[in-house]
Length: 381
Picture 1 (cartoon, rainbow, N blue to C red):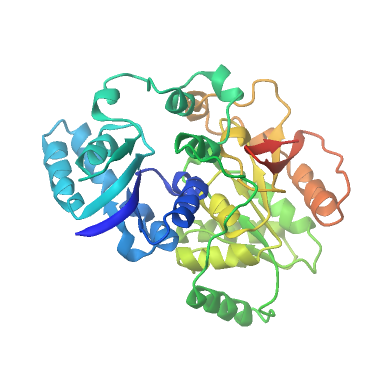
Picture 2 (spheres, rainbow, N blue to C red; picture 1 turned 30 degrees about the horizontal axis):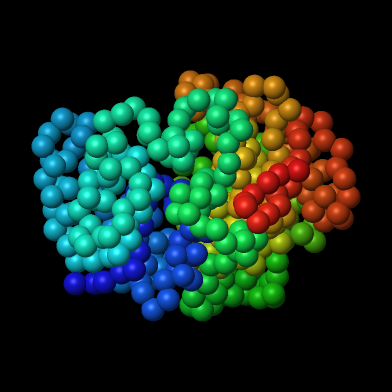
């Protein structure tokens, strides 16, 4: 049996797991000689391994479990029973569930010998929203609460009753072999390994969150020729990058690293960036974990107060429209309605003036906010 000090259940997407890093890193630092285990969706196991090590995770096939629920079969109960058997090997003192659904609640109940369990239990899931005040703030659909909400990372830290100074961030440790791969990619381009490029993340796992290709092309077209640019992401975004570079015209194109890096290698690339630009997506939060400076494009339902890059000195561009942020349902109904709320000239102004020259930009369609960490969490000015 593998003995842990703390086991954390987080069955959500890459970005959600990344935003749990402030809590996970505090647990790692505070566990002493004890171990910290993660129970995660198998699709984000690479990030979990980077956080706590391969021998300290249990990967759960969340997508398959969700399909059994939709099929109204008893496969869900059978799969949870199987996972329960695997969890017998996870002996822990403390268990924390960061989700609000059947699978994570069942797994929380299954952890043996846990003397303290925090998070939604099976009895809680019967309600439409959590009764716990902290969980309610996170999972409610109330726009009023959402617009005045706190960052998800601070919510998790509050929930675990963390009272340490939150200005003391711990950044992700990147393996040497991942650094070596980025050295090789830079050498292939004729760059020095000390090069600090602007890294652009053109994709998103949600169609409504994708910024238009023509906007990225305009940004590349207007960057100074001596500014090295790298596009990063999955192999599915490689064709997108080719179209962006072609549309940008007779300029030095951005290097296309999409699909060429594993997750640890992507983290190594992001850590070297002068600036990382992207929407509210997993790799942007991975960049913040690695200690890179981020510039987030937040429009539609993407709300910087809850899911902006966590750390000191990050930037976000947000729309001036009064109904920002909209609800998730509205963005799902009109996935292309909000993408034009942030214009490429405002991103260029922000990069050329605020980032590269530390001057105030003159923005047309957007507001620019900067993050600052205080003792009790994240704020924006």
